[in-house]
Image 1: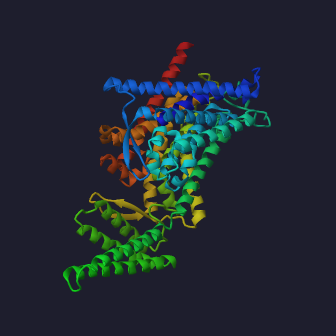
Image 2: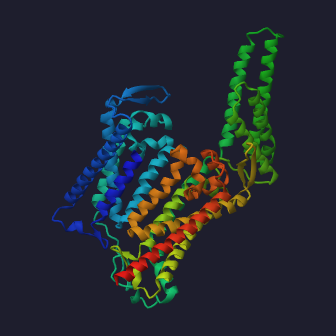
Image 3: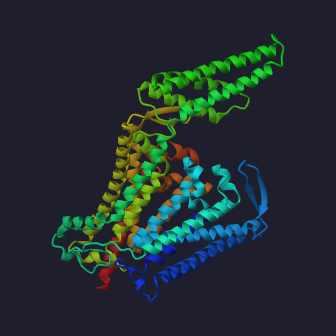
Length: 619
């Protein structure tokens, strides 16, 4: 619900704050009101919209539950937590007041973020997208980035999920006792005051821009004929390319994506000592275990069977510690060849111990087997070490990021670019491309091909930029680093990153082509960039997460083109395992995407021909 509420508010309020901007001028300033009164009037009207949205969404959920089951009451039990994990039930009525306080403060923060962005980002779609990125990205970061758990109590987006905060669930999940109602009120209040002050001082900001002889925009009344350079098909390509590539927001989107990648890289680089910390922790645990066993051994007579058994346990633990210390010493000396030789033997011994344990830990065994295969591959190919969970070398980091968050970011960037590009020729619902000295078929094909070229180029440039920056940071391109795969029998095996890159990159390119044609169809039907953006995001991301939310759909997920947005997770079999659908694979993805591309292209031809016939009839 917090995510749905945030998306709805961003959609409504970006319209409210940007609707008064005409040619980058805010006509709201023409009202006979002081700056403070103008700000207060917008804030109050936005707050009314926010509270109305909250009530409407809540009422919808209540009715939905009431129709299918029961309406319930305010005495429903809510599970609350302590930092130690103890839980108890309290009634929702006792949490209602703090819930409303945090929620209203969160709504105010969303309003102030959008208001602040609207002072610099005059266009509705740009303000909408940046607000979505900051607010939803902030909500995701606070709950998913482990190194930030210690400071999440000072991040305002932590408190957007009010119920999790006041119930203590957020505190327990993050392991941060400072995430509570009081700190939430303080942080959100301070954040709101800072943003309100910033908006007050910057609300009259305007970009000083030197006027050019030719300015072409959606609102421009100039036609294609006014530019002498734009004659013929190449002229049209040059004309439209400039209109897209010269927009600063597209460049900013790419730069922000690169910044996000750099942040993840720095966090991964800070986690490279995990192996060393794990071994040190194991040595400490073994020493504690030895002391406990020695204490128990002292309670038995020397020479007894129990005394001898305890002695053997002590001896084994001391031997293990000696092995751990050798590995630790080799890590400190950066003698990785010794580490690659000794550490897998230690892991094999741990696997043997787990198998002899009465409660056999399957997950633990598979984890150790993965580690063994990883170290053996590094030794065999004489490669530099990097933490398997936090890669830092060029292609291995890029691949890891593409498994986590990059597919969503790349999809949003591509949809944003396409929503602008495909609606450039629509002014107030009218298609001004009919004024171009080109045949309609040529215009259609050129526009579609250009859209595909732009998105594939953006997809490739972003991946290449991340790869190059990571390589410059670490001095290692990571082309031969191991990519871990698990076969149907559960056996781990390693292959080179470059061999897997060829597969998932090709699948990603096919997905972007499929996405381009889909957005073209939407733009043909909707003809408004912001609504095309919102619709495409809801449809694409909705279908991506639908199999995860609805169990029965997972068995048909291999037929959805959106499934293959996570190309790396398809390539390594993770999605097939997660959905329990073995049909999800690279080969299936290529087939589904190719069929989808052909079908959508035929739909484009039908729509364009139908539109052409409609124009002829009107004449």
